[in-house]
Image (tube, rainbow, N blue to C red; front, side, top):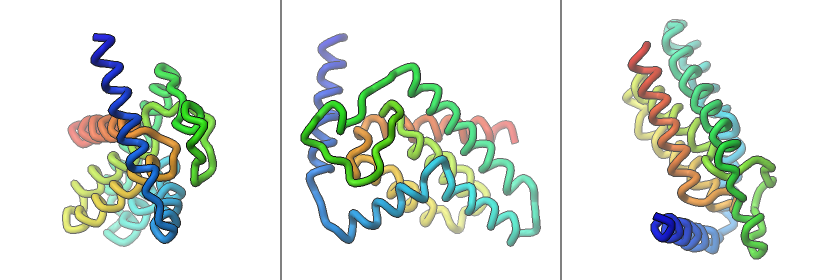
Length: 173
C-alpha cells in the first residue's frame, strides 16, 4: 500500500511540473482572473444571485447553489485540517507561484470544490448554460495548478467534494 501511495504522489508531482512549466503571459492573466473569481465560490454565488434576480425570484434557484457552494467549501476546509498537505511551492523550492500564496493546506482544493458545486447545481437549474458553466469551472480548477498553488490530485479531490455535496443538496431539495 505504501508503494502505491508513493507512486500516486510521484504521479501527482510529475503532472504538476508538466502543467506548471507551460507559461504564456496572456493565459497566465486569464488563470489569475479565474482564480480570483473562484475564491470561496464567489463567481458561482454571484451567478446564482443574478439568475435569481432575472428569473422570477425563485428562492430555489438561489438557495440550492448557495447551499452546495457553502457546503463544499466547509467540507474542503475541514479536510485541509485533516490532511495538512504542503503546497507545491513549499515542497519544491523551485516553484515560484504566479499568484498570492495561500497559507492553508493544499489538499483538497477549495476553489475546485466550490467550482464543481457551482457548475453542477447551476447546470441542473439552467441547463442551457451548462457548457459555459463547465468551461468556467474547469478553468478555475486548472488555474490552481497552473499558478503553482495546488497539485492535480488536490484539484481532483476538490471536484469530487463539490460533486458529492451538490448531489446531496440536489437530492434533498
